[in-house]
Length: 357
Image (tube, rainbow, N blue to C red; front, top):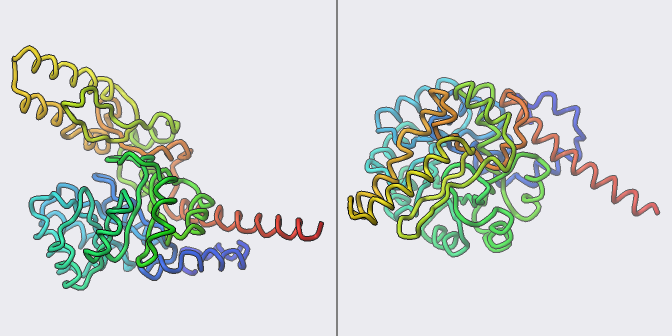
């Protein structure tokens, strides 16, 4: 480890080498110094934060979100101007211009494309691989992990319900036990609720190749999020990051984990009001559902860019409780590495102590 890890010479070198060996499969796959990916967060994971993560030895990932091909092209070019290190692009599988976005990534020599927000098609995976890039896909269950591998995914991310943004129902603790002992053919990265290096270490020892973290980077110095957004992260406790609640099975709500605020309460009232209108035959079921879904339109941007953390959507994982201050990305990554190394040193000392007794 060099460059950003110049001061890592102060760490126990034997333990540092052991950590490097544990996530070697991940670093080889990503082309990074440490197997830590930045989670793709819309409006947050853009050129400044992505390049900072890659420059600090990790692997930054641009969140394409709702960008059109021209916007994505500009973002990739701007990021390439800020780092010579590898980074990836996260594309939403349901994006109406997915094929065009893939072509932009391939033309600009992006070597890792993360497909999120649904099960990708075999055609999309094949186009990416034929274009010389590698596919990273999300697997929220073992059966889907096996299916994605058969479809050609080069690596998987298993993300627990502790994560911020759109979440599944199963915790990382359970997903890791279900998937890591079984899936060995491709690198598997763990995500959701991770905020410390010793926790990452435990998953590496279970068979993970690395980890994806979003929340701990959202409030970094280099993050272009509004100061109000960052301060909300620093103030928050783990229990403040809650998944949105669905009040009627007939009107499904895609769960999103965010900090509890006025908008969270208003959303509950809005659901109830729309359902009541439907029951009173004032509107159709389809219109009621659409109105519920539109409630959050633009809410993430309001929080991230405008700083309206009461009426916007402050998406955050439960690891937000471990965000105690606004730090540079390099410090965050170095802290994670140090925590993992310190855990390995402590274990060695425990073993030495027990063997001498």
